[in-house]
Amino acid sequence: MLEGRKLSLEMQRDSNGRVWTFLSWLISIGCVLLMVSLWIGVAIAPPPPDKSQDNMAQAHAKVIEGMGRLKSSLAADQELTPELFADMGEWIALLTHFSQASAKAIQAPEDSRDAQTWPGRANLILENLNALLLSKESTLHFLRTRDALSALYKPKGAISPQASAPLTAFREFSVAVAEWVKLTAPLAGAAKSVTVTPPLTWAMLINSKAPWQQINAQMDALESEAKLTDNAVQAKAAQALLNALNSNNLMQSIRTADEQLRKVWSAHERLLASLDQLPPVPQVVLAPAPFSWSQLAFPGNTAEGLMGAMGLLVIGLLVLLAGNISRQQHLKILSQKWLSLTQQLENTLRDVTQPLATSVTQQEDLIADFNRLLEQSKLLQQAMNKPLETPQKSLEDQAWRAASRMQADLENELMLLREKLLNIHLQFCSGATHENLVYDLAFTTEGIQTVLTTASDLGRSFAILKEHLQTTETTGNDQEVVAMMLQISNLKNSVKRMTQQLRELSNQLQVAVEDVPDGQRFEGASRQKSMGRPHGNPSV
Image 1 (tube, rainbow, N blue to C red):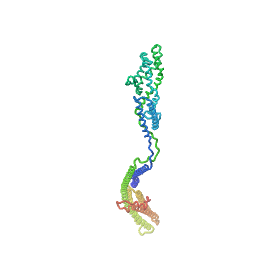
Image 2: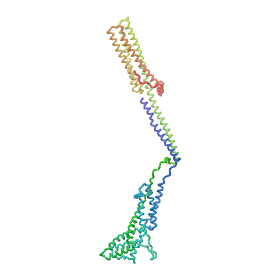
Image 3: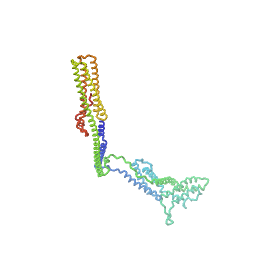
Image 4: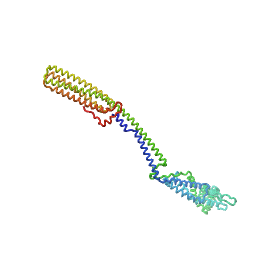
């Protein structure tokens, strides 16, 4: 029944059915979850959106606009006025606030110096703007210092440019002042007596860098030249220039303004570089939002969600239909296999029935032979117990000839029966699948072997009795005949038991196929349940 167990396991597994069931459950769960998400979207209002990025974009737009105006105020033709520096103060306040907000938004340190991010770029711009504001006074009084220096060299001034020899500190200082005045010279008006003073611009301030540095470099040389002893004329001129500078407080003003103007030139250059290619809008690092059931809502509108749910329902119905068809096909294939298997088993059982009936018939014949043998043994016992009219020797010979003939017939029949049962056993074992029948036939064969052994013992008993009767005179003692009759009775009873067992086995096989026509469906399972399972192997 190995094939039957395999089919049962295949029926229990049914992998195709499990796949379709899993798909149908999955689609059903998806449909339910979609409906729940639609309900959440309708019943639960979502939390207000975080506008931090929008606010940052608006602030960035204002800063970009302010930085554009700041860049235009740093143009070469921009006039340097107190209002310009006041506007710088406003831009510092705006940029400081944006720097702090952007640093907090992107979670960067507020003192960052990274020019690729807004906090670092804003700190660099603020540093340079503060440098310009701190140098406000020196910058606005730049032309006043120029006018004070040029007044020393006017026709009525205290200093004459030709008062010293060339390549002296006095002459180089005078040349630098003349170059500075030339670069920032007043414009001629419509009338010769009217001059228009040009406004101070970034271009004028930057162009004055070279003569200004030359003036500051020659001031130390003037002090050294004023102390010369071997050239009194050169020392006198240098001393006169130093006295003129000190009397007008220009020496201290120039030295004080030099440090601040150096910062202004450097800050202006760095500001122009910092205002190019400003960083994009900072991406705000949002804190993780608290959990809200509205996050599970359907992302689309309600109509789209309902259409999706209907689509899932239709797909689920199609999957269920496909699964049902698959199960029916699976059951159809298994039923065909079961039908083939049961037909094979039915044919095997039908093939076994006839040999069993033949075996029972032969054993019944054997029992009849045993009965005749017992009757003849009783006659022999009666003949031994009373005197006979016939000679003793002829009666003994006749009795022994009959016993020998019966013994030979018994042995021949048992040998034939044993060979037939062995053939049945081998044939059934080679193709049958019912284990109990195989065991019953095997034990039946062993029982026949026992009968054959007992018959051989009977032959040996006859031989011993014959020898004993030939060597001793016959008396009224019939103990050997009684023992022989007892053995024959035991042998007959054993054959009866085997016959009964074979009949029971034949009845069990008949129960399995008694109501099944040849070649049709095997339906012995329900009958077997009502009558009970066949018993195990009977003992011989």
